[in-house]
Image: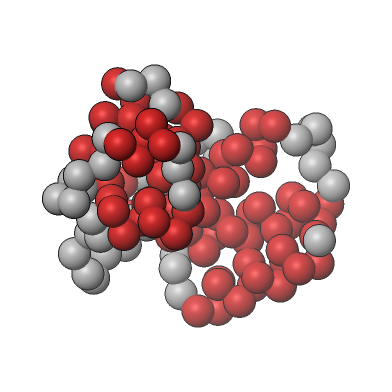
Length: 124
């Protein structure tokens, strides 16, 4: 796996529980009044994201997406964001933290989770 590469779909763990409705995600994170007005009780996260994007409420859509993604996908997205926005080369500790997080995404076992947490703490 190389940096900036999309996460292969076949490597993703499948969620054990049914997806949460968008309303459960929106309440704790808070979105704009305009975004709140577009929310319905039965919308899935995907449906709500589509409505937000159509309404050009991009900042709200990003907030919902950040908390609505399953954890592995959210971590992968965060790694892509960090790699695309921080100066290159990354400091050694930062690079190790990103590599450890990517490793956890691709193989989500407890040892990799702990290693990623330790690497993140070391990187600050």
